[in-house]
Image (tube, rainbow, N blue to C red; front, side):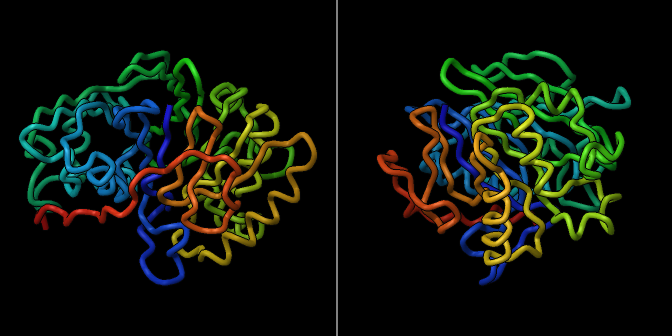
Length: 317
């Protein structure tokens, strides 16, 4: 398995010089085999625009799983040339709710007068599917889906496995809704623990600091410290702080990461901060060198050609 981070922000994109090393696109993760193109995409924030570069201009053929339907996880859908072209083949999985068909749910935010087209206006072969909790086989990966607390609509976390590697993905998680938990940040509840149990990689909501959390607990997210606590309790090998607050600068993320690495303690999980272009693979959980968040790993594999620029977005709006 090869996991590449295409967008790591929450809520809104974060452009500007203060956000260069970690990147400013919203949530999107591409997954594929070590020796092949991505076949599974998690969420479709603005980071999905980078998928076209990963594919070298080829069309996407695979599945997209949406953890939920907030704008920062869906806004990139009509702006990615790899999935909006005549020869694209896309299976889009939408969290089932209210017995409403998947395409109709999406169209509530993506249709006139809010947007020029609705989801059925995307080019290529599209299949819209309702996603429920339980075990699935999607794009040649084993996928476990569980519901997690997050304000404003049904939200899922995912556990994804192949023969060599297992990851958990909980980008938006508000466990305080289930009770204060041991530290006052939210419960280490069964659904989250089961998804994260023993994973090689836990990508988890880290939108707030502890100091901010008292005023923002009702936003539906959690402190970065919770992600580390969950990783420790679930015996995850590596915790990837994800869904960074759009106002959190590179320097502030460096400081937060250093603090959490120090607090992880002996025997705790490795802690890193997500950055666009980071790559994790089953050949040793290598990561990229976009910035200085964790330093390069000795003996890490080649990241491939990163000289390709993002293509221009289609003229949708």
